[in-house]
Length: 260
Ligand code: ADP
Image 1 (tube, rainbow, N blue to C red):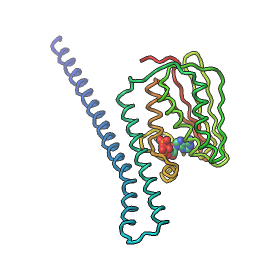
Image 2: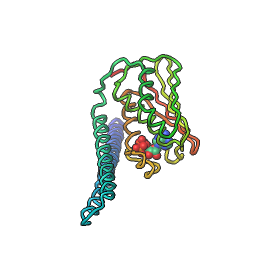
Image 3: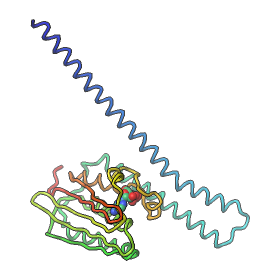
Image 4: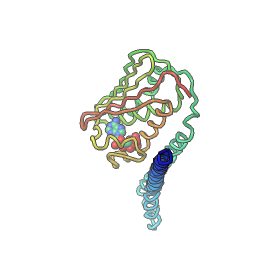
């Protein structure tokens, strides 16, 4: 009978609504947890340099006469910790701006070959310190609609990492290719590689495979999160292929034409 049929539909509908409600609640809970985790990570990361500064300053203050050499050494360490703190804050601000302003890209037509050339030229001195060879391979001329500053930051982060996590006398190869819809930038290195179990996490904020090594190289653990944010705001994609002790390749794919 008709009455019963309506009852069945009502019931199904109610179940569907409560299902959707539960799903939304679950999503919100996950979001809230990840936000709390982020705030806790931020606090921890910001505290680390401050703690070092505190220890260094206390140690200087507790001595009546500090030898000039020791004073110099401790002050240099303090100065380094301040630089680290500034870098974390700067990276955090970049991330926050990316989060809320994905639509606010300052897009112009860019000659990608030229831009990659200038990025590599700027990073050459850092590569030379480790005798790492930097090579650019352009398979075709590429003009694309990009936010020049942000795209430069995204690719610089990848190349800087490729140098940072490389061995002495290694190489970094950046290549550019395109089809009718996308262009592709590959950043390949002969470095230490990323263990398979870490690969899915390296784009997370503050995730580092080897904390000490990252810290020594001046890392904040935010570089890849920033790069991913920038690539995504250009409607692009990024993936990585890596083998421990052999090297890593990041591939970026971005549409040639930007659609807001
Ligand atoms: P960091 O400031 O520590 O470099 P990133 O977000 O740029 O932070 O990278 C996250 C982590 O991913 C690094 O700490 C490092 O362990 C790993 N990683 C990134 N790029 C490479 C690479 N080219 N080779 C090996 N490991 C890498």
